[in-house]
Image (tube, rainbow, N blue to C red; front, side, top):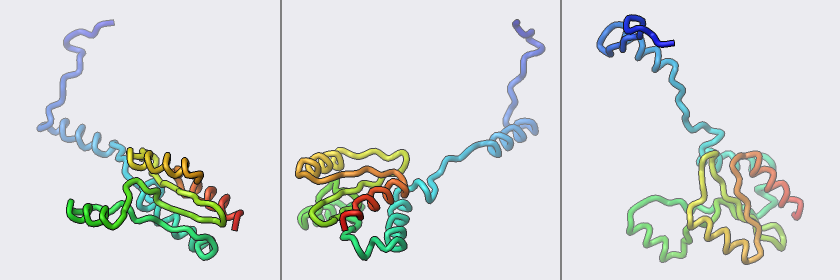
Length: 150
């Protein structure tokens, strides 16, 4: 059923009172998706460390965060490269007796970059285990699993 020209809604101009009300209502109704402490990768790193401390695993298992995400000048990047910093290394490395485990943390939208994929292939080719975790709970499950060997 077609509407007649007189029954069609006219566009609201933004400078009018009705236009301002419409814009205010739209802003109020807008949903903002933002990173939260539960899905931001940096916060996830910190929560993992806090959990390791609280659980007592930190003192029993050789596990550590690899600070490999430095940002800086080209000169700084060259310096760290000369010092042996390797691009793509996983965020956490753990060494229960006789084993080597790499754990990469990503937030709910994060993807591995090409350096991380190359590292994963080399790590696994060397007979080691690699995990990609997106939540604290996944990290806890991996660490609890490998803690069975200590």
